[in-house]
Image (cartoon, rainbow, N blue to C red; front, side):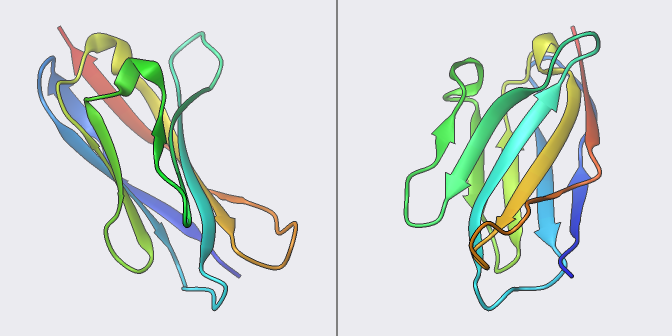
Length: 119
């Protein structure tokens, strides 16, 4: 059974940087299909941040383009580098790992990580 663990996050002043990591507990022989980061600010609904789909390009939400970078940093780990952070980036960040197989496999969520950006 694949488990997904998040690390990183914390508190930073506006303009600072943080790195979030999303690590799958084992490397399925099928590899990954996609990894997506979402965030949820207090009192707001969850929103898309960035996604990497195997064999396709990485995509970003407009509010984070040019500031966030999602990378497949190692076999099982996907990092979200967040630079030039703004107070509106504050929220709980969650990664969603979609296995490459079997077809229709259920995606696995990380536990969530708090990011707080002060002005």
